[in-house]
Length: 432
Image (cartoon, rainbow, N blue to C red; front, side, top):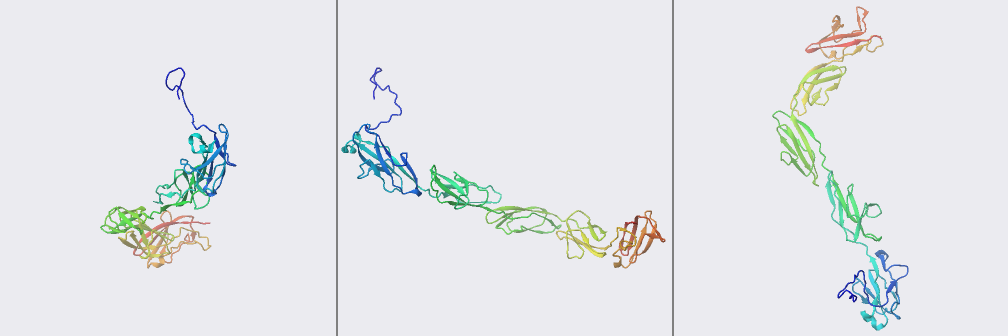
């Protein structure tokens, strides 16, 4: 195109958005109930057959001759034999096709592109049901680790939805190839064609496994002086790794310290067990106390010990509820390095007496002295004056001196037992 007006040789025209086509009628293709030049059909609704109609606009031709064409890629077009009218019924379609019609004013001109025109293509798009997305693999972690994302691969024109079951509409996440679950289990991903409400693919299962850690309990142990101690990891697992470098369930040590062992199970999950080994506590008895029916052992130093009154059954508590009598007290450290024993007369003293004649707590009497060959009890007032004294086995005192009732107050006793240390204490006399 040249500009022949003033201005000289050359093209002085600004050309934009100009479409060139062969001179002839503009023809449109339509089909009943579809107000568009394309039909999108989900594969599950196929096959389909359409009635197409070609309508020229009579802008150039007085007469019209037609030739229908089809294509599978909208690039290469082929004449449809025998289809030379303004109407065409497609075969039953299960895959995408494109249709157009060539129009000329003379049948001879249908073979000449310079003397004929073609319509815009009418598209029949069969939206294929997607294939199931491809899993990128199940995931497994150990308890306490960060939960990874599950993922699948899909086609470019697809999106992915995640579900908690193989079927059903319990949707967890839309439009993502990646999903981070909150709990272990099997999750399902399906692909859908972007922009279409067509059937989704079959669902692909992807599993997240969370393995438990080995259960370990820390320990505090004691080791004997110049002794040896066996440490036990305490759990059957696939592998052990001690802070000493050893790899067996049990190891032997000969000195105090803090020892660690990593417990590794068959899934590669591990936990650390700590064993604190301290020198053994020094065993010694500072005092033994009779407190009513309780027999209480006071250790010489603070520590962790075991106690017994028969030498066989040991307990952690240093208190025993027993009746009066002579007992052999046993004490040992937790490591079993040393055991000591001491005989002790356990006597049950009344805390108060109420001499009112009702038969309860009327007299001061010490239970347990009947187990000793020789004993003596003395009662004193608060000023240290002796009020009564006598043999311990049969001794009792009802709060009188010389037949006169003594006042309500505290009184003191002293007990002497042959071959045992003496004991002193006080009690209350209460008159009601």
